[in-house]
Amino acid sequence: MSALRSLVLGCGSYLPERVVTNAQLSNVVATSDEWIVERTGIRERRIAAEGELTSDLAFAAARRAIEHAGVKAGELDLIVLATTTPDRTFPATAVRVQAMLGITSGAAFDLQAVCSGFVYALAVADGMIRSGQARTVLVIGAETFSRILDWSDRTTSVLFGDGAGAVVMRAEKTNGAANGKDRGILSSHIHSDGNYADLLYVDGGPSSTGTVGRVRMHGREVFRHAVVKLASVVDEALAANGLSRNDIDWLVPHQANKRILDGTARKLGLSESRVVVTVERHANTSAASIPLALDEAVRDGRIRAGHLLLLEAMGGGFTWGASLVRW
Ligand code: ACO
Image (cartoon, rainbow, N blue to C red; front, side):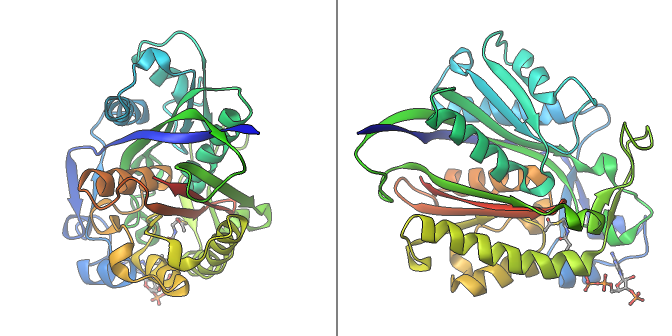
């Protein structure tokens, strides 16, 4: 019996030019390079220029992904853009990117799952490809997270950065039963539990305050849940494909904090050399962090055709999830 699966054709990313180091931040809030590096592994982050919007970052990443994939923008029939920091409350930033790409057909929408946004977007796009609703899909994670930070709050402002990453996927016919050796998205597993909404949130919004609001977080609690929930969803993804931890070539995690990455890698028994880490240079770019890390490791030759990638993320909501991808 033939079935459809999502083959990843290419990837791309974009970072704003401006670098802000920990030392520079220590002029803004009472913090230090030592504290930030020891607790998070972050050394610097990129911050979007004035007037540079999420759509600009997303468009730059999308163009590179489209070129890398060797497709024409007009072939795209779906754009899913994961973001927590849209240009406007509406219309969707995805629609703006669609226009910037010169596309007038197909569909485009935003998806909001905070730091888990890219894994959620992959799951949705993969589902639409498998069900025949879309054929060539652009999945983007893009954020200007700096715009929702409270720059007087040292417990959050030091943790985040801006950036964007994207992949292009295409429907591919496969014959016979699903097989972990086939290339493409093997499976995605997404979860949420709204009971934890008050541990990590933005204290504003169009329906509540009429303002954009700023990020608030109980960091220690988030950390505790992240390690447990990530380990559980990773096991779920491996079990669903009859694969084991030893089969993973690369862990491409959401880059929240080096200590969370180390904790997850330890639980998986993966050596540090098999984890793609960008958090020291990018900080936490929310929905953009996985495609940014993925693109870096693909372009520098670490990730190669046939490698098994494990993508995982957790974020506000709580939301969390994992995808297994045969590159
Ligand atoms: N600089 C200096 N001191 C600071 C800073 C800072 N930037 N931030 C907090 N502190 C102080 C606190 O005020 C506190 O001081 P006190 O003891 O005098 O009250 C002390 O440092 C310890 O604070 P904690 O919050 O207990 O520090 P902790 O060891 O938990 O580290 C951190 C904080 C880094 C936020 C950690 O909890 C963490 O990484 N949590 C995960 C949060 C996360 O990554 N969220 C991202 C979104 S969710 C996701 O992507 C998974």
